[in-house]
Image (tube, rainbow, N blue to C red; front, side):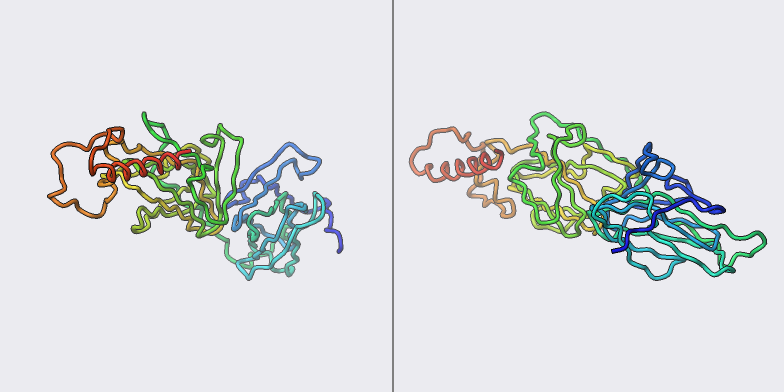
Length: 348
């Protein structure tokens, strides 16, 4: 395999660094600076997010895109002037900085304005942008096409993300608790307590990935984060109709209440979270709920969808589960104790 072409400054060519305001990014990109030995101008953008893109417009007859190759890099698509996408890759066995990752020569009288848009098409693998370079049009030549319009950025939500503040008596279930069941397509991160409740966090970019949780209680909070690479998800409660939500925000905001709900019965309740946007993120930090009291968690209260017959209603609350049974009450207390044991096992 032929080694990628090394980028060298060419007389008369304009170099536009990756952090120039004329370079527009969409999706989540990470910006690095201060390493001129491996980045042109000491600045560099990289993304591991599928469908994250970068857009640039210029007037000229020759274009170079400067980046790097590495063993964690993958495939990307390039579209010129809104045309069909061309697939390329910057995967290599080791790091090669200052490389030409794309080059295009235009007709001498086709000065543009031209647009180039690059998309990451391998979620979890990198695409890096170091600079754009072009040979400018000669003076006196007329535009060969209309001035392009930059891509529309995602709208900023009008509702500010709600910070999570734990109320008294709340039961907190961190995202790595065995009571939470995950489908495939999730990544698990640990060791960042300044960003994750309990120093643990689950994240997915896969549409259809789910997280399922069950509990007995009267109030639920779902805790996660908002960010500029996040998207839409749904919440399904007790098998009902999915409710749509969104965790997109212009910058990272951890420890946020993504969803909350008050219940008029103790349950048990079932919660299913589902990521709806392929290539956009959904992050789960923890579940929190107000647990059912012993008096409200009897077997009768768990039949939430079946009205209690009038003949079974009592004027007073049932006795605490510690009460000693007598006669035929053994069966009822046994069921109550089983329900309590099941909950205790789940809380471990």
